[in-house]
Length: 99
Image 1 (cartoon, rainbow, N blue to C red):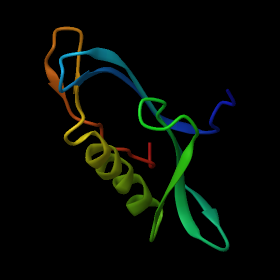
Image 2 (cartoon, helix red, strand yellow):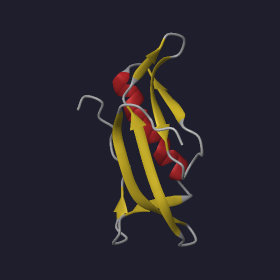
Image 3 (cartoon, rainbow, N blue to C red):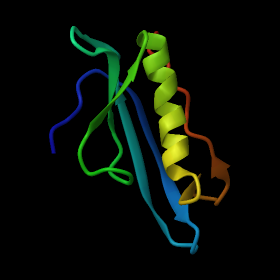
């Protein structure tokens, strides 16, 4: 599997589904980039949700980053919760491109 370039978020947790099953959750987000035809975007890899990397677009770098967490939250809603090793619920981290 090809590695994303310029990763600004590399987050791991467990995903606990509604039936109580637990599996690995890995989220990687690239630094925002600009595409002349489509605008600003972050490339995202999250095999739990999609097998292939995908792009999240925004009006600028900040919005593209902010929309990643919103998208992941919506995709997990009604499907699974993120938990740590102790079973405590975790939030999808905010993506900060200025670090």
